[in-house]
Amino acid sequence: MSKRPAEVEQYQGLNRLLLIFAPANTHPAYVEAREWLRRARNELDEWDIRLVTVFSSGAVQLEGERAERADAAAFRRDFGAHREEFTAILLDVDGSERLRQHRAFDPQQMLDALRLSQTPQAATRQGRPAPHARR
Image (tube, rainbow, N blue to C red; front, side, top):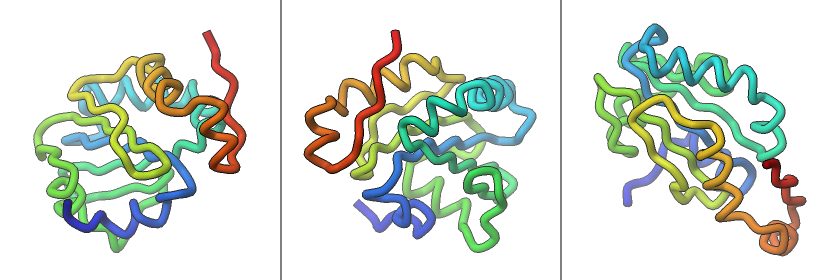
């Protein structure tokens, strides 16, 4: 495995990351994902999920702020995301991939992937409180 971009490594061990690759901010799957992300802000915060968005134009955003030094091509190469397709990748705190989708994602599926990988006992062993499961 190649070295991950510094913008990703800085979160490893601290936060989960949701990487969204999109051709443009007008792509239908991205528009749908952005709306869900807006509505699900509390759940994202509860699970310590930080958002990284990579557009085909070369723009990279970390939590909505442009990352001037980030290399979009390196992100795409390192995560196997094609320039002209939508890809959402959920990384756990340890950097492992928990979910990858090439269409607008189902928010429940993303949270379920985290719940399966993070039991309350495992979270406590890591010194982190586990979010409460919502059904």
